[in-house]
Amino acid sequence: MADLNLVTANKVNVGTITVQQHTFVAGEAITAGAPVYLKGADGKVYNSDADLAGANTLWGVATRTVAAGEAVTVVRRGLLDGFDLSALNYGAAVFVSNTGGRLADAAGTASLKVGTVVPAMATTRGTAFDKILMVEVNNDAA
Amino acid sequence: MANQVEYGLFQMIDQGLLNPNTLANVADSGLLVSGILYDVAQHNADVGAVLRLFAQDTTDYQTAVEQTGAARNQPLDENGRSIPIKPVAPYTVAFPIQGSGNAWGANFVARAQMTVRDMARTFSRMYRGDYEWVVDHVLGAIFANASYAVQDPTGKGSLTVRGLANGDTTNYYFTTTGQTGTDTHYLAQAGAISDAANPYPTIKSKLTEHPDNGGEVIAFVPTNAVSTTQGLAEFNSAMIDPDVQLGANTDRLTGNLNLTLPLGASVKGKTDSGVWVVEWPRLPSDYIVGVTTQGPRPLARRQFAQAELQGFRAAGTRDSWPYFEEQWHRWEGYGAFNRVGAVVYRVNSGTYTVPTGYTMPMA
Image (cartoon, rainbow over all chains, first blue to last red; front, side, top):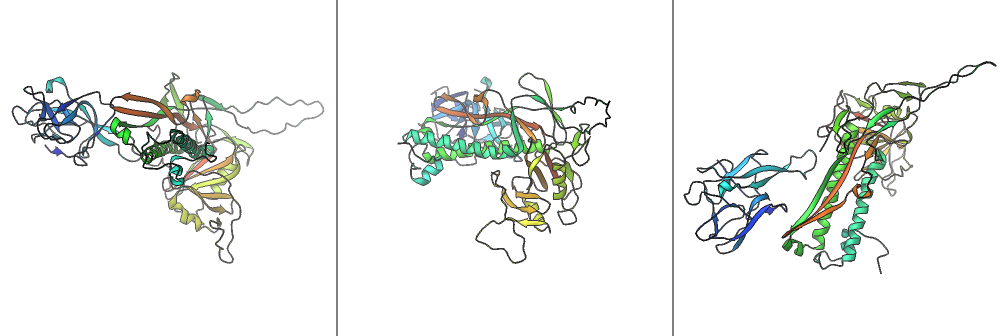
C-alpha cells in the first residue's frame, strides 16, 4: 500500500460537477485531499485512518487545508483533481490509508473505498489522458 | 463610439483598451464581448484555412460522388447513329459526425477574481484545443487507407467511411490514358528524399491525372523532410525575406502561392516539376500530403443542418452554486469525398501505414 500525494501541496481542484458535498467544521487540522469522517459526538469532520479505531470510517474528501475550527467543504460524490495518480491505472480504486488523513492505492486495515481513477481527456492527441479522482463514497463507509 | 478596428482580447490588452489586471466582471462588458466575438471569428478563420484546402461542407450523411468517365466519339457514316452513353457510375461515400468540446468553470470566488488576462488565456486555450481536434480529424481522415464503420448518432445505422483511393474496386478516370481504372493514393518509398528518389513529380502526376483536380499542386511537408527537399536539384527556394539577395547563379522563386495556410505552415519553395512545397510542422514525420487548390476537396465535413449546431460555439452554461461552468462544443465529422483529390506519400519506409495516433475512428 502506497500513500497518494498531492501534485501541489495543499491544493485540490474541485470539478464543477460535484454531485454531493457538504460544508463542515473541521475538528482538527485537515489537509486538502484528506479523507475525513463525521464524528457523531460533535458533528465535525476529522481525518480518516483505516487502522485507527474510531477514525476508520469515511464521509468524503476535504477540498482545502484548514485548521481546527475552520469550515471545510467535503466532496462525497464528484470529481477532484490534484492527486498524483500517475502510478495507478485508469479505473483503479483509491482507499483510505493506514496513515491518518491520506489516500492510498490499496485498502488499509479497514477497507474504505474513496473512489476510482478516471481519465480527463483534454490532452492533445498522442498524449495519455490525465488521471483524476472520481470520489464515490457509499453509505456503508459513513 | 465603437472601435473602428476590431480586436481580440489579447490585442485589446496590447493596445491598452483593456487592462489585463482588471476584473472581468467590472471591465467594459461591451469590449469583452467584442473581443471574444473577434477571437471566435479569428479562430474560425484559422480553422477555415485548414478546411478550405482539405474539406468541403455537407449536411448529408452520405452522398454519391459523380465523376467524369472515359469516352470517345463513335465512328459514323451517313446512316449512322451513335449509341447513347451514360455517365460513369458514381461511388458512394459516407461521413461520420461526432461531438467534441471543452468548458471553463469556476467557483464564485474564482469567478469574481477572474481578470481580463485570465479570461483571455482561458478562451485562447479552448480555441487551441478546438483547432487541434479539427486538424487531428482532418489528417486522420486523409491518412485512413482503409474504410471503417461508424454507428451514426442520427439513426442512419452503420455507415462505412472511406479514405482516399486505396486500390479498391472503385474506378477513376485518368486523363493520361483516357481510361478508367482503379487507383491508390497512399504511396511510400523506402529511402529519404533525394534526386534519385524524388516524390514530387509522382505527387503531382497522381493528382493532375484526374480531371477534377486543378489549380496549383501543393505538397505539405513535415519538418523532418524539409532539408532533403531543399537539397533537391529541382527545388527553388521561396524568397522569404525580400531584403536578402540570394547568391549568384541561384534560381529564385518569384511567384507567390497567395493562399491562407494552416497555422504554422510556411512556403519553402517550388519544384521545377511544379509542386509548391509548404512546411507544415503539424504533420507527422515522413508523411507528405499533396492536394490541389481547385476542384472538389478530398474530404467532406459533415455538420448538422441547424446553425446552432455548427462550428465551435458556446452551447450552454450550468450555474450550480457555488460553481459555474460554460460548455463549448463542436459537432462534425470528416470522410473522403473526392477520393483522388489528395495524395499521401510516406518517405523513409517502403510500406504505407497509418501514422501513429491517427487511426480512425478517432475520439
